[in-house]
Length: 349
Image 1: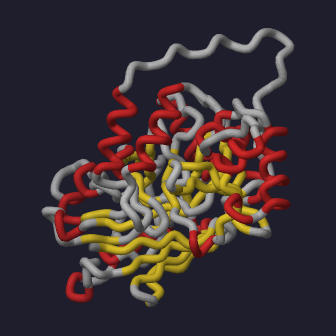
Image 2: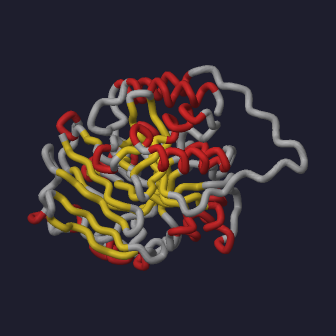
């Protein structure tokens, strides 16, 4: 792992507020780490060197610990704190999901850490209820989002079905975590809305990939929330201001490898203060994950760790008749759930 990434993992975790949100001073630390002089890229591997690792049958997370951000691996005995265990057992295991996604890590060392931590227990294992999560991917070069990608959602918005994916973006400052908070009371808007979404995480450098090969470029999937402010979103012809507020892109808690997920048949739902608001299946997508990845790769190079929010189904507040719209407010608790990917919870303040 290069020195710049080590600096980010250490400095960011030291300044994260309790409660799980990558915010405030943590975002400043993130910016400082990013602003550090770039380290030279490693030379390409010589001919004959083993190919990059492809993670399979793994459920990963990023944990906030007193020692810094750490890769977590979900097991039947709890979440393995990989960084703590790797240091104790003197194994060179990856420190972040970004490293695992890149494929540039020692798979045997990671397996050894997991096995030894499960056997030893204690401080190397964290109960899921006690874990403090960070965003399950911390350094995406791009965060792409797709608008109007469910048939029923397009209908409730009185919009025609798009002929091609509608792409917009968020920024890294929007990253947030399971258990985090979004400070709507500090924002200029008031028409806050939820959007539970399947998020695809790119695993390979990808350009001009065919639809047939596109899913092979996806590392895994996570639950995401495309939190929005509708007045700012609709004020002009572009949506950026209504989509990119601080912490408006929670992801996690889990990053599940692609071999365990059928992205074309997943149930999604949203609860607000315990009341179900959205319930749908990804079968209703207009453009599937493979179509979105292929389409986006025509126009830009997708890189390992890039996030693609694939759109939200019907049931959002803006889809209600105007007289029935009750916008989200401080104190509300939102839970986004997707089959096999888990529940993503956050609170508005």
